[in-house]
Length: 527
Image (cartoon, rainbow, N blue to C red; front, side, top):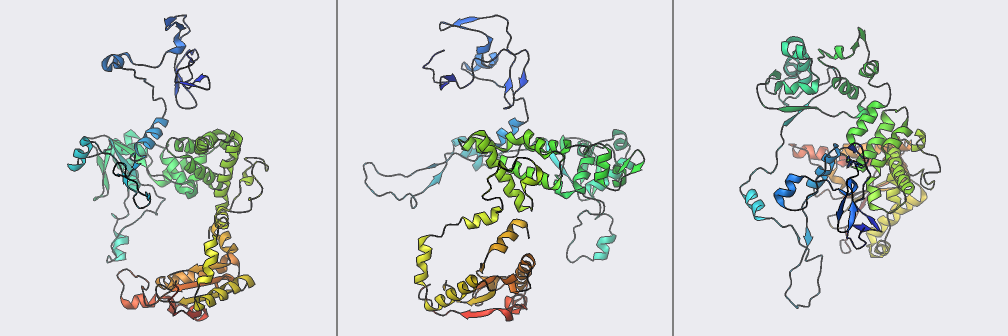
């Protein structure tokens, strides 16, 4: 109503007043509550304007009276408030770039040399840190509960332990999960309670040294089952069952439904109705949007598409796409459809790195994504977009005669398409994942600096991998490989190894060494 008010933006109130009349309080899509505003006809005159309930700002009368100032009070109505607080608290300290000079002093300011990074600390914080008081605490404590498939628990032992005694020691095979099953069989309180696995720490204490649960006498804790990735298959389904079935007494009991024994945990989850639709995937994404950033959500969505075989990928996309575009929406001025297009391209890039394409899931029409880079994975695209500067081209003229021989011989092999492996012996100063596999297939030249520090097994592994992905029996799959370094410097590092161990692991003892062309540099004048 006041055209000069600072809250006006493009002629409208940036806080969206006046609000609408509402019969009840409810949550909106942007996580802010929509408050109940009665259309009871009550009106007041303020600054010459007639106002009603649509103009009332959320407030608390007690706080207004206590602090004698305007305080806007909002209800934290969803779990998303945790995501906001987490980002705000852990965003780091506010910093400035500063430089101190004398008044009226004229000098050339070199921002690189004079850069200072600093933050301001108040006296109370300085005192708190000097006395090493606790800066944060978690209450109640969170107990992370282990999960593992049957007979697949981790067993720890010292290298000097006898393996037979380790295998025959029943205590070493005990875990939180196996003892949870045992307590449900033998303990009366656990048997009567029929607790979920995540509820168990609220009533029992895990003693790591004795590998056993005992009844809890005091303190409040929260149990949290460690996460399992959908790509982990059976382990992921086991976690689903443990979160929904009360009082199981064994792995077998988790797979038993009305007397019928399922062969797998996935089959059991289907029989229980946990995997009949994409509800579990929606729950996974709904949980993730409360604390994960958009980039992580896109990677999670791509992982679900590949490993979880959702029944309706397009429906999943439509339901959660608004959460995956938050970073693009805030940092660009593109239209909404263009933003969705960029997000789909980002997801497709992740899918291509895992041997899939977004077109396989019928999420969008073929013309939504640009067709100029659909056959290029993100790894190749990043490498192909590297700009070679003019200085790099000019540096060729600075090579010594020896270096020029190496340069010409290497590029000659590259341009002729012939294989080759060289080792440049020069003193110091002489200067099957799908996406990676595609990059290595496309590459013509591979340069490995400081190769003498690598174990011979590493070089053999590179040779075997290049042969495999290029389907070639030629040395290094027919690629030109240049190894560089100096054997008079550091040899492969073998933890707690002897000099003999380092020499034995050296690349000169590799079976490939006889196939390597050796070139020696001696002139260091143009290093």
